[in-house]
Image 1 (cartoon, rainbow, N blue to C red):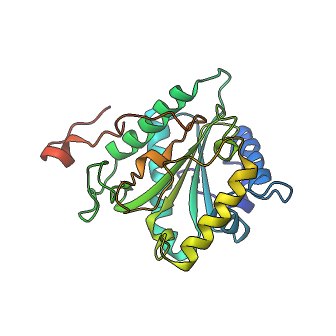
Image 2: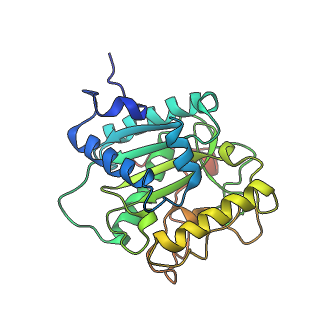
Image 3: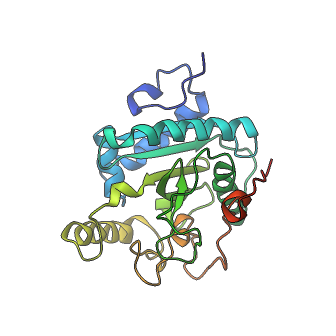
Length: 255
């Protein structure tokens, strides 16, 4: 029987399938997201956690094929069920904290490698209604047929505390979570105001200028996935690599 890969919050600390480092990383995450003294900026994530709408998985490294297969399996299981969980659901993928210190740039490379590796072994084709060009304002990372907004947290973040974590961590939020939430909608304006207000006190740096609304002209989703501490730092081109079969109808794996 395959090991359990997808967990609810109340299962993690007692589960024999979650490694010790995973329980430690989860407790660090939980203390951040439930803090009353310093409210976490992402109110959708906080609400989702309180309502048991978040799901979690734990793997060692993105540079091991079996780990990526396990991560992909857990993400597929989550995508197959997320619409039955609740509106503010997310999938949080924890990686084992390393003894060595990595730079922000190294974590950024690791992040984009992870998305590329997951895409390489995706069993479904890229959705027809989602552009394949990251320069398109309607582009979004897709997996298992679903467009997903992605957020990366790392130990290297210090000023942007909302992106700091015990170990390398990636959160996947299905685009479905944000349906009806735009810069022109009442709920969209409310969420944006609360998030921006909390960021002012939570982070030691102002809100990143790339934060914007999906689909708006000039907005690029991929630029919001990995935010540096320095607001002036920009990554020239999207590092995500679309697999050959999606480009030219030929399959070529990175592995």
